[in-house]
Every structure is written in structure tokens, then in C-alpha cells.
Image 1 (tube, rainbow over the protein chains, first blue to last red):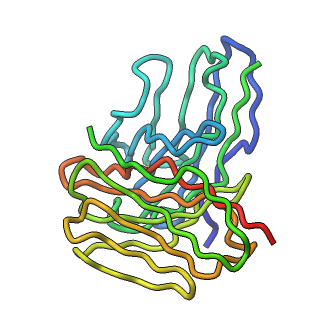
Image 2 (tube, one colour; image 1 turned 30 degrees about the horizontal axis):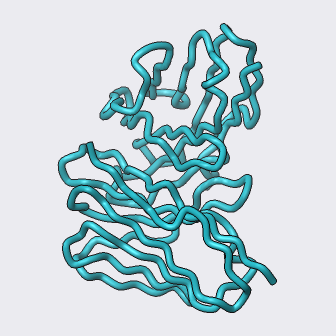
Image 3 (cartoon, rainbow over the protein chains, first blue to last red; image 1 turned 90 degrees about the vertical axis):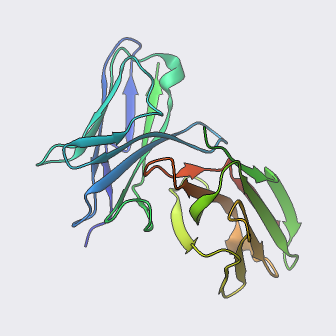
Length: 114
Length: 112
């Protein structure tokens, strides 16, 4: 059973470009969470999704950021018109039954905006 | 909104010394989870506590959940260099939907 797969591991984008971060949850997991981590900081909750539904997006910036978890395929975190402040590590986690069970984290995508 | 505070932010110990990190929530938690993140790595689940006053042990690690379910601690006895990393607590509040809110983490360094 493969773990949570995130790709790419490293992503470099110029200011104004779009960044697409992908997350394939563990097999059998229907709950996905996205977190952002700045250097030497904690994990900031962004969004919680369950297949085809956004359960909680209270941590998502109102503009430029969107997330989806389609019926088929990976969850996508999309950042439009990236700015330098978007540079961070973005972690995806999945769980089988919501946050009453452990969350399995992917290796993260390190986004650098130049 | 719910906040989870964790102290200290950094802890430097000599190998063999004990280490404790503390976690406090602004709201009552339905459960608390602890994760460890090695430098350059990703968070790895350690344990979940659910019951008021619960204590769980994993070898040299002892986890406690407060009676009021608003605080928790992780204690490591006789630290080893393999314990190096950042320890995060993460809490879920009953009235906060399903999201897990993480503390800022405590970065542990162990001097051999």
C-alpha cells in the first residue's frame, strides 16, 4: 500500500505563473487535508476535502487559491498568479475516516517563487 | 477561532537528559494527536489521545491528555540523537468541523 504521494517534490515558478500541486491519498482514504509550512514554522491548515466536496476551506486565502478532490484522480491545490510570499512547503495528508483517526502525510511539495 | 499553543519553541538538551513539550488549546478538544517531523522531512503520526486524563507510553515517550481536554504533554526520557526533530501536537475541537489544528511545534536538538 503506497503512502500519500505528492508531486512534484520541488516546483519553481516565476511570479505571476500558476502552480498546481497534486496529492494522491493512500488507497481507501477519502479524506484529504492541505497544510502550508513556512521555514521554521508550524503547519497552517488550508483546506479539508472529502471526495468531490470541500468540507472546510477556512484556511484558504480568498483569492488565487483553490482546491479540488475529484471522484477520480488526485486532489489538486492550485495557486494562480503566484507571488514570492507563496513560497513554502505544501503538505497533503489523508485519512480514512476524518480527523478521528491518524493522518498520513505526503513528502510535501516545496514551492519556490522567483 | 480555535488556537493551539505549544511551548517551548526550541529545546536543546544533552544526550541522556529528559525533554518535555506542552500543548494548550483555547477550546476543549475531542482528541489530540502528536506528530514528529525530522529536518527536511514530513510529519509522521506518533499517537492519538481521546479520553480525559489519558496517559499513553511508547518506549521512552509518555503522552498525557489533561483532565479538561484542553492541554497535553509529551515527555521523552533519556533523549537520544535519534529523537532530533520537531514535535507537533494537533487538536480537533468538537465544534470546528473536521479540521486538525497544529501547534507551532517544539524543535528538539540533542547534543551527543
